[in-house]
Length: 72
Image (cartoon, rainbow, N blue to C red):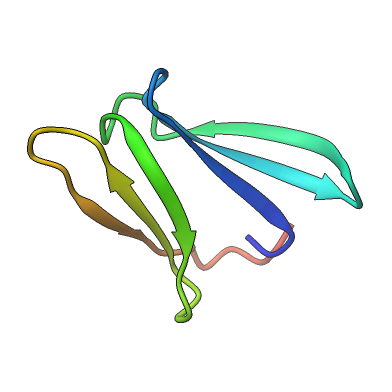
């Protein structure tokens, strides 16, 4: 996830990972479509995990852990 930008979408109910090269987006990946609901906020925690806050009546704080795959 190093060097990537993550954006949550309320309307489309997904998380977008943008791979950057300098100030240009070179790859876009849409993740978690309709799996968590409306994603209100995305933060990188000091522990290296990614945290998502959902905007639902039963809203959740979700911690995403990277897989054991090497960096791209």
